[in-house]
Image (cartoon, rainbow, N blue to C red):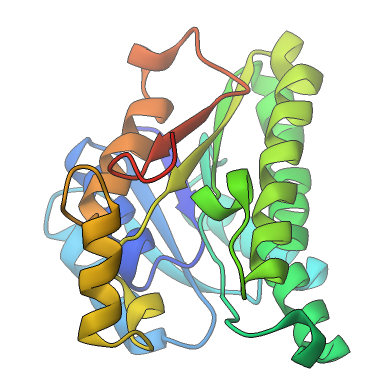
Length: 243
């Protein structure tokens, strides 16, 4: 049975991905940083579906923590066959008002984490001549968003890393793609008023906002054999907001 490791999986898109992969028969490693109760509850839920699942704590912005996470997953579930780099944070505000610390935290969490996790996953994938990496980017990484310059930069970096790494490890039988969500109703939307949410819905050609499950289905597809000839691509799941 294949093993998937999903970062930032205790809630939102990550939790939806964990459920989708478990339903597809994967053993699942649920990464969390602080939300231990949520992650352990989710792992129990997944085990009830008949798969193996573990909750594993790691701060993915720290390389040593990431290495420890992969060691734990390998010891308890086996080598990682599919890596989903989902963990991320956002900051809304003017660039001129962002502190150096805020910038560093956001870039390390959103971009350096992808580097650390890919670096940890690849040796076993290369030995197996098989593996899939799916990075969760953002439509703002494609076009940029006012008052989210740092977030946009981090996600643009994820997209660039995805394309370059796909070229690098394709000869080793490894596929690397990105899913680029639009506006999705997760905890990141908590700071938006009902009026803001309505305005975003009106700006979306499909006149609806995304759900975590919408993104999870795209991630699962790119991880499956149905996408065996797809690598280095960015699958935009945004209701048509960015075309």
